[in-house]
Image (cartoon, rainbow, N blue to C red; front, side, top):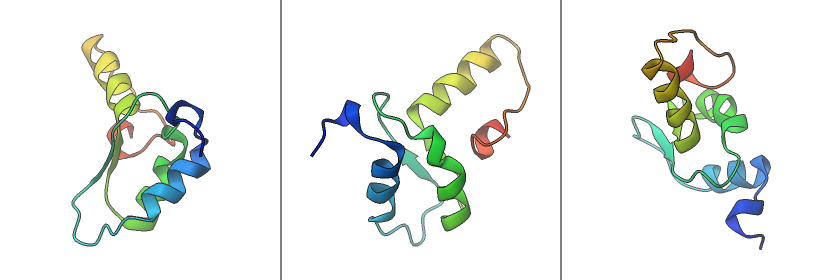
Length: 80
């Protein structure tokens, strides 16, 4: 098993889809030391709920804090 900072997006996707998300209002992937932003669109499509990651929220907060309201495609509903 690779350390958390060596996980590929596919590893994160497999881990996220191994959990039962029935009834969830959203999915939160907490950790800033692995790549999860690439899989946000796939998880949102699969489960039909917003997917939030630590790095995505940090990007959103930084942009909004600087007054940049632009959307960024393919990074989930939060940045749409």
